[in-house]
Image (cartoon, rainbow, N blue to C red; front, side):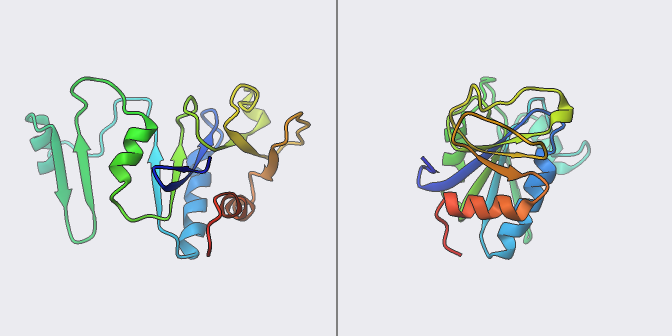
Length: 175
């Protein structure tokens, strides 16, 4: 299972403080150097805002607009208010991205959803391994020596190129 809705997809699951975002930034850069178009879906646990108070888009959204799409020559962003307060599933979010052109979707978070994930593990965080309760984990990127009983690839969390090579092979992406 390496595609959802015909999109090449792989996730990163880890506890807070493991360095998910830092590693994903490096992986995105390496994939972009291979001329791959990368989309990222990041799960946020808190009420978040990408607008700033005083900006027109913020003021319009706060006035009651359910959707606020702002666009320029360089980028566009859509802010959607979940008025029913139900969080979208990963599949829902992929459907939103579906019409957009990309070669691969990287997902940060969504630990509870079933899709291929690379677990990021740092012993100093003091938390257990996720693969023991998540059969969707296909590899573990770590800086520790691990002895595990499953056939899971062990990667060096400090070697983003090794992780990119694994992703490309796993997702059968032609460069």
